[in-house]
Length: 382
Image (cartoon, rainbow, N blue to C red; front, side, top):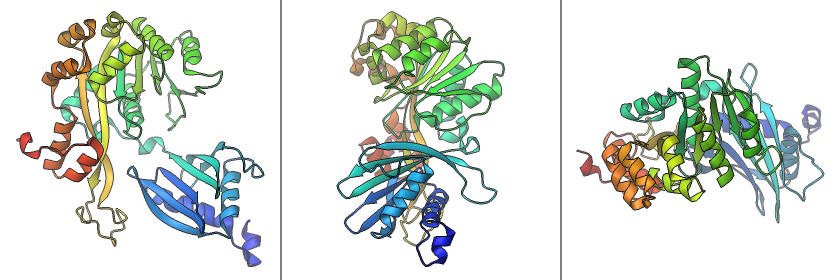
């Protein structure tokens, strides 16, 4: 319903939908969830990785609000029995730059559930120095990405900021190593980068990672970003591309650097191929920063952090290189436990880096424990 409906006394559902989207964007939401309940529609926003209750829409408005969101995403409003996905470029107001929204609808027993995912703009992307990494880690990443060939893997669970780190590396390449052809294969493309060829793949259709990668190797690329390595075929193709002189950047869902190395071997990559290509592994997580306004005291009146005590996130990372000692263990197919011992000499692990952030007042121990699963040993940081 539009402005005319509102003038006749009918609810302006169009304005309600777009108003919720604008407010969500202003709050820094990466996702907005419209969840049907017995009494209406619960709107929740994901801010700094956490879902927060945001608004409750009355039951009489819920169907029309869902329909309006589906119209924005070019979905079929008359099909309420199947999952649907769409997208839209959305501007938060006059003069505001549009952002990409992905809108997904799914049927439930209480009605359709809609999730709106927000994809950022290039000016919102962080440089390597702003990720929260140490100066030594930034230096290691810069050295790795400056190489003409090799394999760089960023690892961690979903929501660990892996894609943000990859984009920071791509921008580093584009801005400081001009003249190199950079192509990305992503599912989906999360941010648009000027000067970079970006391709959205369909892992379960004809435009899969494997098929795209095989074809792109004939397109004279120098740097390839693969959104994720999910299977043995993609892993083998990525290693083959690195062996033939390409720089490959990708992500993997894994624990730490040791587990990442073992995972590549388990996907069928030969040890001698892995040690010849794998340059660097960055294992990371995201922890919330203490709010600078309320100092983490979780005051409900704090508009900056919405009463959570936290505002913004920072990476906790362990960055390791494959030096000669690590290569020898990989060739022996050493288990993850042995690899962890060997990698210790390269610097602090995730727990120690989390303890450092607590000691510096960036975050607190409960937040580090929530993300890493262990309470940081603050006294061990010196």
